[in-house]
Amino acid sequence: MAEEANDRGGDPSSSSSSFHALPHPKKTAFSDSLVKENLKRWGLDDTLKVLRFRYDRSYHKAAADQMLLEMFNDPGFRETFRVRFSVQTRA
View: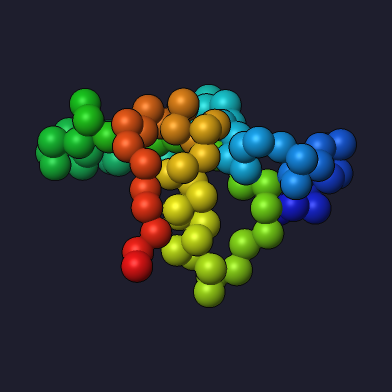
């Protein structure tokens, strides 16, 4: 994904934010009538929120914990997702 950012002319290492909100597509799986029906049945139709982000740094599954810490502490993610706390690393 870092290469993707460089292809767009951005340098992910110089950005203060690694996560960038993406626009909502016009049609998603949540537009499907069966999905809507199930969300309503499970009580998620009014509470479930889906946001999409682009991550500008390289990712490896062995570093998933680190990526999540970066995500919840990232100013771009926090502003869009409205995170009201700071995530600390485990001792």
